Length: 565
Image (cartoon, rainbow, N blue to C red):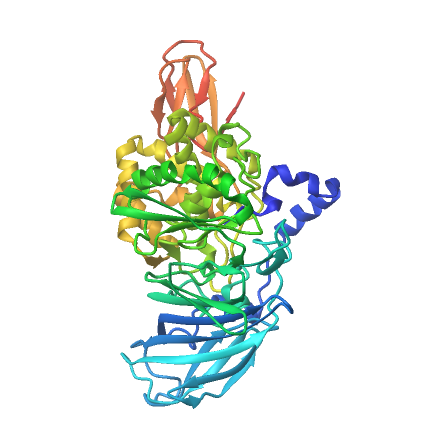
């Protein structure tokens, strides 16, 4: 996902002065309240937990003339051995929650050729399924629906459908729905905890529009009513919010690259007017993929290929069909979010959104409260690409430069079970936490092995943030729990306090969680950095040079240092 404008320093000109900025900061400090609808959306509740999605068969017809859609989704699922229904009778009717947001309407639900009764509760529908629904059964329910979907006012952050025209006047339609949810335009089990094993995406659009969706194009069927159906198929598990419609006046550019798992197809879909620009800008894809495979392991979707698709908004990490709208510019629309200038040598959208193919798409968190796993690692991938391109020092400088965007408004980890993302610091602060851990490890091959192992261990998996933390602790042989607690659950940056007394220096951590004992490298007297092991209690060491007043914390540790008189 992209960094929302309110978290980017260069968007400050959009705010109406100090008053609004202060109001936003005050609002961020207010405790959140959650509703029944939040719980329905964010919890793997009793109408969700008994069944596992295995396949979505989505068919949708798009009519730009009146901004409506009509379609059906076949939801194939396996009944889990999750206990008996509330009635205690194994063959009693089951309640199934299927999500579809207003103002879209369900026309009918069909299972085994029979209409299924349902009731609506806000953006959730509860279908009453007839028995038997026994553990191990594999069944399908088809949901027919229609309506005028929510329009994305400021995509991709305010998600929904985008209805527009390109600069040549051609119709251009796209979806962007992370955060708001995939059920803003199609019926599904709208929670990250359950992904289908595969999915069909069949989109019908008016001629001469071309639809580009996820996976590989299986068929193109022209109809006598002047429309065409483009059938795409994803052979791998996929996040609901990654499923995308991109329909417009596209041209197809084909390429390939040899990667760690053989030949990987590269398919680029720019607007017809932008072919020349695309040929030049998209040349960045090959070195980017080589860098990320080095650090993270094989690209996760060789079977489905890699695509860049021009979109009428900035971008989105749609799996195997990355949405691109950066105007064929380097940086973030021509700017460098790190403030160092280092990010102007590569296209932010190509690098950031492709990094999500590993973190967010390959490794997906069950609850969006743990979105730091998606965004922190992906933001950190920008620094790794800078390192691949410009050297280790440049990569580190890029990540350090991002600290100026940290707000420390609220904790990075949100509330679980209520569809709460937590703070936007999941980007910059979390990536600097990872860079700090890398310094503690002080072994780049071991660090790289952890990143590659993370993607191998959780290959095409849904995980919790706690599982990721436990994996890092185990693989690195360190107890990083106090660090995760400090950086992810508080708004405090560790402060290393120190003081000089004759030929000694004393030091301790303050502004930290109980038990915080992170090691840190410091330079004393201008000498080679040494590793200290501060705790919350004062410790003292002899200075290498008597009378020195020099105490410098190695800059890649995300801490501050304060001297006591």
